[in-house]
Each structure stands twice: as C-alpha cells, then as structure tokens.
Length: 267
Image (cartoon, rainbow, N blue to C red; front, top):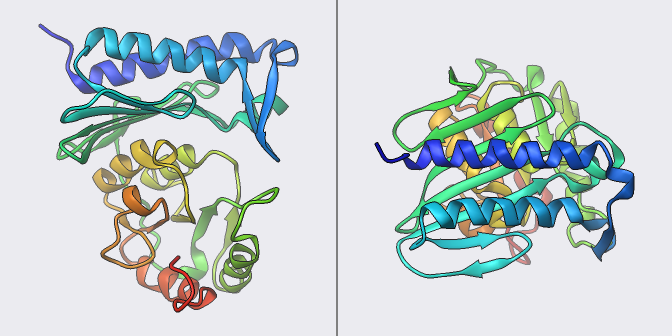
C-alpha cells in the first residue's frame, strides 16, 4: 500500500530530526552565517532542508515546495511547506527547544501538519478532519477557562525587526491578567504546545508561513480558536497568529487589541 501523506510527513520529519541530532552534538563546529541581526543560518538548516526536500519530492514528484532556506518551487494544487530547523538560535546555543516543521497545503488549504521535537522524541501530527496527536496519542487544548490562570506563549521581535514597541506593549497589557508569558524561541513548538494543552494560548505578529503552517493544522484539529488580528483574518495569509482555548480567546483578544492603533496598522 502506498504511504499516505501524513505518514510520509511524520517519517521525513523524524528522519530530519535524526540528521539534526547528529549535527547538534557537534554544533560548535558548524559553519554559521547571519541573515540579519539575530537571525542565523547554519549548515544544519541547509542539511535538514535538503534531506526533507529529497525525500518528499522523491515520493511526490509532482508536488510544489516552499522551504525556509530554498524558497518556492513547482506549481499545482499540492505544496509542501517546510521549516527544517525552527529555533536555529536555540539549536546553536545548546538550548533544547527546537523542531522540524512539515506541512502540506492542498488546493490552498492547510491539510497536514507535523512538528517533530527530536530532543524530547515527540512528534505532534494532525490531518484535517482527523484530530491531532503526539506520538500517536490524541491531544486537545487545555481546559483552562479563566484568564488569570492562563499561561501564554509569544515571540519577541529582535535586532532591527519592526513592532518591538508594540509587542512590548502587548506583554505589559497582558501580564497583569494572566499566570505568565513564555518566550521560548520556536513558534512551531509553541503552537504545538497550545494544541497539547501545555500553553493556553499564543500570539505573534508577522511570522512566515513555514513558521506556522504545521502548527495551524495542529491547533485547529485540537480545538483551539485561531485567527489573525481580525476574527475573519487567516493567519496563513497575514502571518499574524492569535490563538487560545475557546473560553479564553475573547478575553485574550480584548486585552491585546488596544495595544495597536488600527488606523495606522493591523495586528
């Protein structure tokens, strides 16, 4: 029987994780360059992406491709969206919070998402309409229903990135109303953690599609409310993600919304 798309995505994410674990052991010897201040590219990113691309397009030669390091290729109704090493800075510093992210888009809709954490040997996987799992065990968002008890994740702009002041204002507004905010440095894993109930919500502005594609499938299949700044906005189009458990989402959005001047920008 031919390997189905979810099994293929899981297999390639896990095998890329094996490649990365081998390189992580000798990370101080890796060649590293900088895309911009605080944004690094290593031999590990390139090796993992090449590995994933060879396997996926070897198995599905007619599919399109979007990778963080190699860009877009191919056309048609199916496209693989890949971040081969989400959390490169963590990886290079020896911080054990990084992941491989693999998603499949079919006719413009995200259909499959896999986030693999090699350090902890955890594979978060979801297919539209079939639920979400970690290592094959079903997962759902948390049961937290009060903002003051909720733990949120976020990403913080760095270097010369825009929106630093706006994001600092977000955090200042939210902190008095919740149990804490975590900035862990790998958006794909943050979204997977919301899906698994480890975090109660997450927000971040202007991410790339490869950062969030797999996580969005996980979130939707695990029961999270997921939007951009406006409720009708699709994060896969804007790159901005606001997500939480359904009971928490209205409160989270009310706290975050005033931090942005809507006449001058959209969240």
